[in-house]
Image: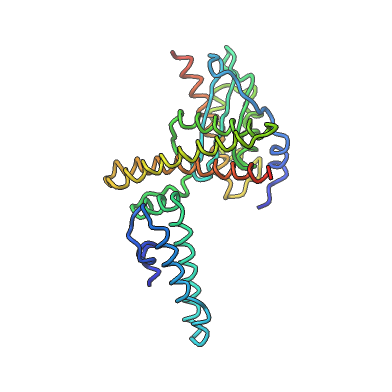
Length: 127
Length: 177
């Protein structure tokens, strides 16, 4: 299967790969997985006191499309508010990366991951 | 022999997770002989086409039932539970953390100067975990009520990640040689 230029670009030069300290109260961690392909994705955000995402990191074990989807999301969410980040749709990711139908689920995974990270951050703040 | 039958019935095997692999191989061999295209050479186009269809069904059946994960998924499928094509499901965070950690460990092993021993140990650990999942699946499936089948499906999802990890390990291994 042919990957789009954009997927290859993110795959070869993934942005923001890494790990943040999960015990930091400013960090939200989203962990998701897709049993069908065995992919695992971790997406983390660092949020400032104004509720704006200052930094984002990811680590994905999976196919090129899953890596590209999460890489793209970490780029996009920097500078967004939590609300904006939670509203990201997988279709935006899939469009941007020109994902073929069989790889749409990778963009769904990335959407689930950013939502989970936002949720995790909010949960941490409420305790 | 009938392709309307499920894989177990088609192969003449009892519908069970605990499959006798020798019997599976023997039945498959037998059916393959019966279905061999040469035996149909003198027959009509329709019958030749049928023999091709049956052979394809036989290959599918064997490929599915041969491995524990495929067998488990197929048994659940027969009970109306799909674990094959589901895209996004809720998984326990602890399990995901563990899977992430295992993959991180494999990455670390990959860059060691002589990773063989560490890789062997890692592989054993994964295999052990996987056989534990298989045991749990067998238990839940044997009970068979809807709650147990849901638990069986949850275990199958975990097995999928572990089988994928095994493939990753094999890849690392093949790069070593």
